[in-house]
Length: 401
Image (tube, rainbow, N blue to C red; front, side, top):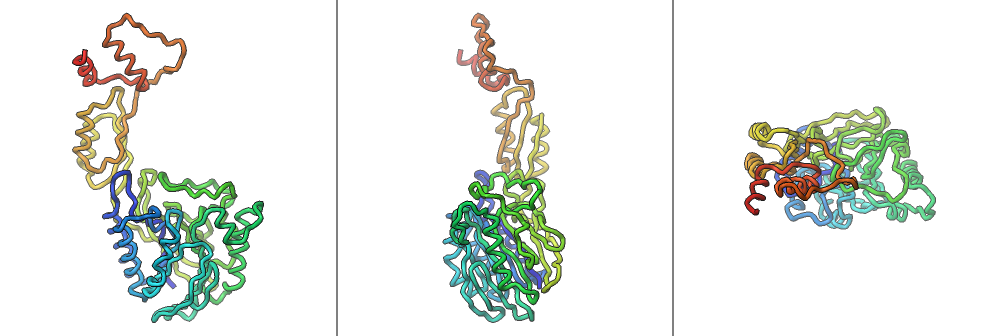
């Protein structure tokens, strides 16, 4: 059985004021092409389907269009859960219509999906936080433990953790283990699908993407991959935007990566989807397929405006965080030239290169007898981290005088 794992689409997301919708249309098209060319049997989408609770009409339209294409009008099951950026009610709302197209949408934690049957597959078993599917082309089922995102309060409420002292890890472990023991024997493929910030015990805490809405689970412990039941052959995670397997080769626990680079902290990252080949009671095999659509993000630093302009002219199809190092204030004409040269400059950051004096010292004195132009220079430096005013500013100052 070939399963495709993807996550963190963030449809509708902008980079500051720059819309990424056209890029998202291209990468969703690429995703559909990969699913078709690889003859995928089942698609899992591990949360953060949209970028906020109230996505634009265009983002919603792209979402449903993509899911319908992935499902091949009901031939291929597609299961998508809510992440921390998604409204659970919005994800759940179209489910009665979506399932007619082979799409199963799970917005709430511990949801119980109704049993139904289509021409090419059917749900043969269901429980809170669990579904079992039988695809016509296989003589064995696939079982999926699903845990959509929820904050600590809802996790404990839905999973029965009345005792506030019980660690969240313990609550999830007991819940998942009960499901696995009841339904996940060696005669089917067993998978976990969740959108939680999970890490391996003893390893450094992974950094959340810059600009990403952090998953704050109160003061509870982090969720550790060690609590995943032994029966689970593959765990499909969402939230972190860079591909990583925090499990083992035998029992992968995988963040599949986001569909695009969504912040400059992701500049240089290669985005991909993960394809899993699975059989009952055997180790799965993994393959990453790169996603090639979308603009490249760069963080570039120059100490010369002309060099910056030359680079910008040669690299037009990208988005840039541009830092200009200088010991004087950036001229308005230089700023204008940079923006005219490239329409993908998201941030333009002037950076001081000379040594910054400690202007907070109490013994700093002001010489009021000096020339007013020199006095203005001292004032400007005191307000701008010891940065010298440029010739343009000095000329304006003279004009005012």
